[in-house]
Image (cartoon, rainbow, N blue to C red; front, side):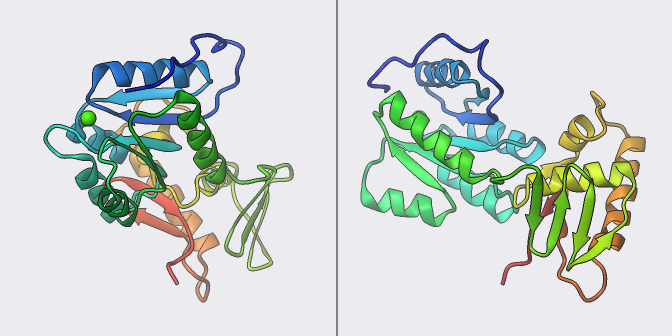
Length: 244
Ligand code: CA
């Protein structure tokens, strides 16, 4: 399905460029995408069925999902609709052989960020991937802003609506992680791994996360201000401005 061969070297020298999920049932295409994107420095996970992809999307954090529409069982459009209804805002790039206008519109209406019609050149796929991942990243990681919440990474100074917010070290780390991934749902497992630096979750750790999130809410989402910290039931948390 690829019209050119992806490059196969250079992985070792390149910095980590983000976690990608490839959902593709054709083994050859999946392998080519994994190898090509890994050689470009991406951390690539592959799922071959819609069901497995749906579970993974709801339990882990990715910067981008490459989603084939023609999958056995639950197809790509079904998965896309379901994750969007569930509040997952991770960017989705659709890969499809169905190159009719109707299918493309349907995909974009269902919440895709971009699409690519098979067969495609790896170079074109890479350009789309880079564009979507870049769009999802804050331009200046030393400062993070979501609505009227501002986070200065170097001084660990946080303000909300111009007023300073006093946080403990862990509360700051948690808020900064959520804000860095603003508008994307961050799972509990991801917080365990990325903020608490533990390899596996536990009931105790889940309770600790809940305590930190509720303290953050009291300090950040003060009365009279728009709610920024949202719970996505059964999945995790997302920092975003309320829909207008
Ligand atoms: Ca397919």
